[in-house]
Length: 396
Image 1 (cartoon, rainbow, N blue to C red):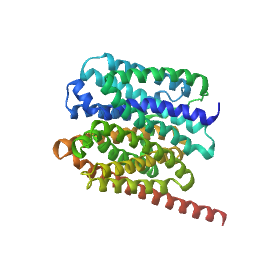
Image 2: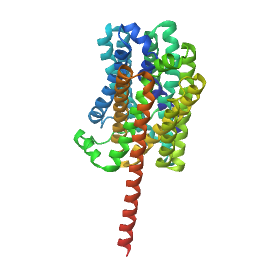
Image 3: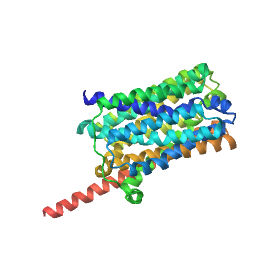
Image 4: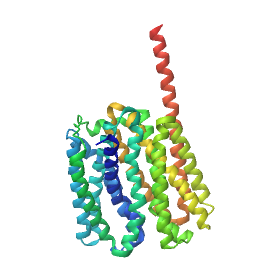
């Protein structure tokens, strides 16, 4: 089997586990009704998932650092299946939240592992686009997982969605066993050393970009469905179509972001994506009365946001090659931590201000990501100049 085909298998895995996270956002109102809780309480299912992912993933990756990567992936997928099945068996909000934590931990290990495998099996000139393809699988969960998940929930109930995901993951495990090569794990890096990586300016800045980017995204996306229904006035059927289009835009943005990073560089791609992102959010704040205008601007926003996300994956995989596995894990943690913070901030905004105000707070977070990107660019350029001067002095 070709390397390209193997990369798409890894992307399929990221799609399936990504669906388990994003599906709640698309059916937030229906989950609240089914569990007998408020929309705010249902939103905490997203926050808890993201926090468990952010905190648990680095710990689990340290524990499993020396394990062969394909075996680790299969183990993670089996635990993921258990979490999905528990979510449809256990009664009540509290036990459902525990099932979400199990899904979050297994999702974190699976995503970091498929990204690591993709980076190792791809050729040198296709690493960024290969990583972007795997990220594309995660964004594809927005295309199918969210809009179709909402449709299935309306027709058959939310439990059918999680049972279906578990069954598909079981099939994928057999595909992995017959296609993905065995890849040795690396040396275990203690958590203290991982945390110490934040002392390196380029790593701290790069991870901060991820945090601010995902905080802004979490503020909007967590409450996007009630925003579009209650503020913009979309019908349930039009909402499903909108979510589908946003997912397609995310998919295209993710792939083109990786290609742009390969050809034009990380900083160039990040700057352009963040600029379009924040501009879209500001414009969105003034046009919520027009369904067509909101539809167009949200599509642009989704494209720009995920082009930056794919670029960040490549950025962290290459900024310190000797620690790429650890940095990919830390980046996933920062993504989930940012998403959790964004969901929490969004909940406060919805409860204390208004749901229409989420666009402004999201834009502020993206501005912070842009400022941090500028700081990373300055640092890398200054370091390059210093290294060039040092080399010139040695030759002299």
